[in-house]
Image (cartoon, rainbow, N blue to C red; front, side, top):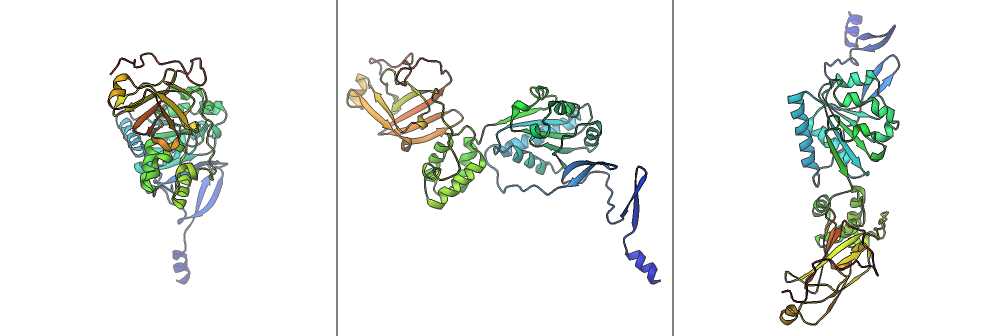
Amino acid sequence: SFLTTLRRDMSKQLYVRIGKLFTVTNDVAMDIHDQLPVGNYVIGNAPYIGYYFEMAEPFQLPPKYYGELPSTATRICNTYADRLKLQNKPTGVLLRGEKGGGKTLLAKKVAADLKLPTILINSPFSDDGFKSVLAAIGPSVVIFDEFEKVYGDQSDQNAILTLLDGVYPSQCLFFIIVNDEYKLTDALVNRPGRLFYSLEYKGLSNEFITDYCKDKLKNQAHLTSVLTVTAFFTNFNFDMLQGLIEEMNRYGESANEAVKYLNIKAEILRSYDMFDVTVTHQGRDVPLRKGMERLKGHPLGKPYITLCLVPTPKQRSTYLKGATTYLTLSQDHVTKVDQEKEQFIYQSDGYEITFTKNGNNSWNLDAGYGPSRPGAPSESEY
């Protein structure tokens, strides 16, 4: 009959029992799975329902990755798979450091590469029900972003330790992402049984910046100026780099010019840092006047640097002229910046001048320079 056909075409009403209550649903809404489908979810908790997974938007990932991020993601994926296969254990990864360094992006790339359900934790759940639900998911990626803010109370942090160290037999890959590691409970530090990896982010690496500039910077002659500017910052993040390159490309300027207008404020370079100074000419060391072998303060923080060279008699009689030579250096003479080694190389009039950070800052200083370095070349050398 018509009514029978109509009833058949309509979705079937179903009833779901929750405690003493029956809620109304239908067979279209009911989609039962024995495993959580691949996708992104935010975990929540509600009365009468308990813990549930709410579908979230897919991650927006960049078309290209720079620096060490791809190789680091591959290593984490391989380690997680290996530990799961051989030990059937969860793996934890601690990512710590300033915002904008790529911590969350690394976690998202790993999740995308593994093609597993990804659970985002943005509430300080820590009870047994929460841990049991996560442990029962099976292989999955669980991301605790801004962990020290969500779990602001260290008692809450300590309450999830049994989830991380395998007391609850989960098969998860856990990412604990923190911006302020000093708010992290000590029970999560130096404990590879809970968090197998620990990666520190101190801003973008030289490799990342160079790769990005080679891909995005229109005038490659300005690459050194980018590295010069970024060396002023302890934590130069991706947002800052994008803005800087965009402005340079728009006006064809060097980084030193473009940064003047951007919402990027250079950090004050520490005045007590010490740098060893070496000078070469045609591959041979040229002695400096006594007291100039070390420079107080960051070389890039000075408008100019004047060095007095004292060539040996043999050098003066062959390829160098004059008893003394004065070199005046500015940022325009910078040819190479290595942030990791804190090494800065200048070139001027055929000379190569290298400033290398020295970890010992305890010298008594006189007029900005430290004492002569032991073993400096004597007049008789060469």
